[in-house]
Length: 400
Image (cartoon, rainbow, N blue to C red):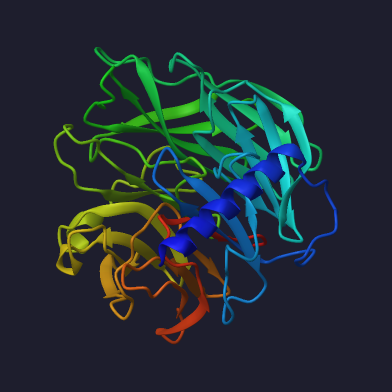
């Protein structure tokens, strides 16, 4: 990229930022793009903390090009990119403003549909949909010693109920703060992964699994599992757990550096159970050849999951590889080694209609959507994506 082109992009970013800060388009304003979109991409430019995020969208991932110099919207001034997406809308907690927002990306602009004052939790540590219109947020208080929940009506962002979750195990010696992991909802109960931490963010040599009554938000049972320490990341930034067919909750444990073993495991809890399945575990670190895993996993159907890990054979950078694992046989199915090495940012994959879509950021200039067909085991190249960026912060679908 020439210096002139770099300067042009910087000028565009400054202009768009000023415009969006002065006057945010209202819901339904006319613009240059489509009124409704199926898929979106968040591209990151610059280095933290001076990172600008751009949102672009499309209705066809198999062809064409996303070009942030010609389309899209700068989103930093409007909210974080900690997105919860459902039924064409984006839900976002902008903690520095103390508001919970509902967005719609329409005609190439991220527009606010509704926002309400909200400061009940310090941030979203985990979330789950109990139905298409009911969203549960869970987070800590500022002191890290209480876990609260809020149940939102997603239509108008009214609070259905909120409070503190009661009945967790007491803090063990030397650990005085909570660490919240992933959670799911199955048949009237919330299955909730959590742990404790000390002032240095180290955990005890186990994690906890709680079953919570959705009607009362009281803990019905809570057990410790010493097969691993650490928890998954349940925030909207990452995806480190999934629910299969509303019958089983699969989740990872990510031990912190300094906590002993750094092996990353996959466990599960079955619907109706009061404890993790004692006979089920997958050592994900070992299954990919003792390589470092990134915080991205997902269920892709047919008893298969995808994981992202770093392959040092590709070079000194992140150089991510994607692998397919059978969660029933607990075996590696294959590595998607047809793809160039990825420079992963945070969450750049999703599954729809038995196909895995990957927004790949390559240092070899092959930034495309890559499409893995689960049924045929074939990979095709789709839409061209922006080059020379920090990474793709989020690649996802607007509709399930």
